[in-house]
Length: 416
Image 1 (cartoon, rainbow, N blue to C red):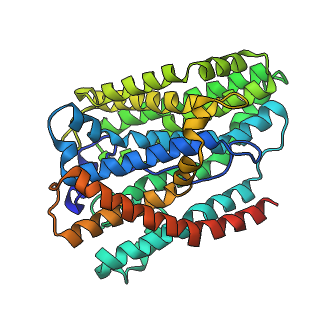
Image 2 (cartoon, helix red, strand yellow):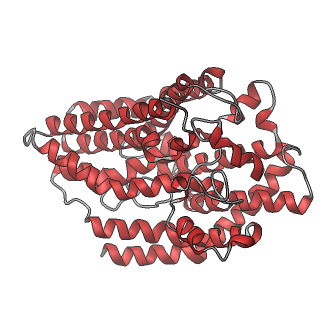
Image 3 (cartoon, rainbow, N blue to C red):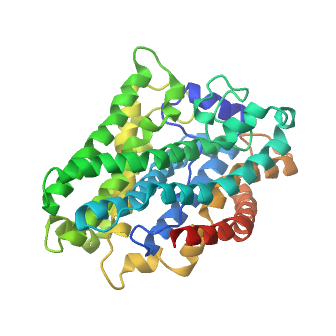
């Protein structure tokens, strides 16, 4: 993706097509354990979006035909990662409401989130600005906006789009940060409403799901607001647009906690049904993705879209995210093919470095294209994908070892 094209997207796409943010946390969904299969989902989505960005840069995603259409919708990883965040971060709150376990302390939770995402992010911001935006290094306000992840709200910024060169994907991290800040308050409000239904776990769970239904509906209402009374594309970058994706993951978190509270209840039966037929759920996700690759969700990457295409995209992308995550989240105890496929050491490693893959991918793409002298929207997909992937993985691995892991140890001290 060229800098010029990345700047033009917000003016023409209701759902941003540029980048995705992998679930940057490695925290467990529960009280301290890890859901290893979700690392596999994170890894698959992370490298899918890398493929998507390289496909855009080479022009492969803009070609006519079904293959180009599929490549052009690789941004479906955005709702997948947002749903992962909703699932993993809300589950301890849902468990507290339904089982009586202690809820996370807001202060410690927010500190862990900040320590987890900001150091590596700040490093990449500094590198990208030094490489491609040196004329703005002395602008203090520019640093404040970028380092605090407020670039989505800087409508009159000098970069005229999703962000400075090399940082366009960070719009999704800005949305994540907003979710992190809102979650303790959102969880507290939902908990208070659920507890008004009495001590019965079934009743409380249904009340939590009702709240999440309202949260999901907010995304569709927001999409209407984007277009009426006039089209305001920058509002697509604001958190309400993505609320339905977080709500989908949070709903899975409720189901998991509900099944734990009532092993013989409806949520447990639902979980067993999902675990018994993961292929069926993934087939539904694949079909929803194929439909999303059709013109029903609007034009490819560039062009003016309408409100209906935006609404269909929300619906289809939510279906993809939910149906992809459900079999990995609702695994039975013991071994299973899903756990073997997604929870092995290799996918676990890729999941652990996925945040770095997210952070460095545009730096790697632009650096590779500058080194080879290729023009934007040109080049062979495979011939560029291999070196870009190697460079991105190398940078991500170094960042994980030298930055992320040391700060994770700091987070572990906070947990104690």
